[in-house]
Amino acid sequence: MNLEKTVQGVRAQVKEWRREGLRIGLVPTMGYLHEGHKSLIERAVMENDRVIVSVFVNPIQFGPNEDYGTYPRDLKADMRLCEEAGASVVFAPDVSEMYCDDFSTFVDMNGVTGELCGKSRPAHFRGVCTVVSKLFHIAAPDRAYFGQKDAQQLAVIRHMARDLNMDIEIVGCPIVRESDGLAKSSRNTYLSKEERTAATVIARALLAGRTMLENGERDGDPVLCEIRRIISTEPLAKIDYVEMVTWDRIEIHHTADVPVLVAAAVWIGKTRLIDNFIFERE
Ligand code: AMP
Image (cartoon, rainbow, N blue to C red; front, side, top):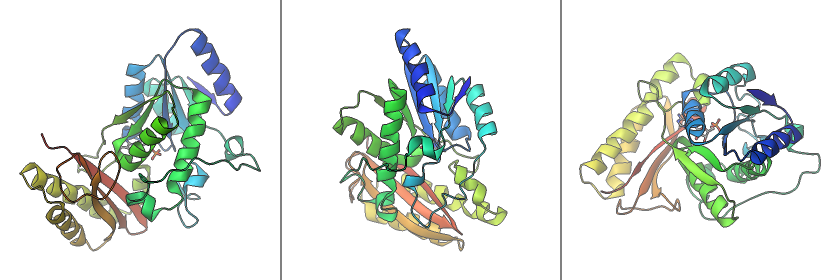
């Protein structure tokens, strides 16, 4: 497995693979990799001949008061995990390699980004769409892998690929959780012991909501009320949002009569965590 720090290095490698007729999978990440990322890489390895994992903490998707500066980084450990999972290349560029001094072109979107994290983090998806477009141009993959953990991001990338005629299959992968239900996240490392225990309330509350829907409830309001109620029982938790939206367009929806995404963002102390589930009526 190779480490590439430059766009040119990845391009040269990709060109060679293309000449050999190999299929290429891309897994974009911000590093500090865990089992959730690993599941994406392993899936990509199964479905492609070569896999590129990008490790890049993208400054333009963070707001001014967010955690860009403190986001955890450990490239050595990331390389080990990628190697174990069967990746061929880790692309870990410096910020200056991705954004030149007078960088001024952005990819943005209306609609899908209006609710949930798009509402709480106004410039976030513009940053995500821009960096993912760049990665798609650099790695020219056949398929790209994204986790349902960031469900709105997955929907946003699907829309972007469709709208801009990117000939790349966007593959969504299920959420990987800790044994107590907490969705795995690089940001879980910010949590104190007390907060780590408190954080389990998010998955517990969502599961209660999901159970209501599985038992036949179709009205979103009592489901969201119950999820909010359960989260509010935890003194260290503060709700950013708990919403039900259509799974394809991420629009607020009050009835589970179409595939819906029930998503939550919750502050546990100073750490903002997200989790969700998708419900489709049989
Ligand atoms: P990040 O490094 O947080 O930007 O995540 C990179 C990719 O890994 C995104 O597509 C995430 O949705 C995905 N991912 C992160 N955590 C998980 C998880 N617990 N389960 C599945 N996918 C995940």
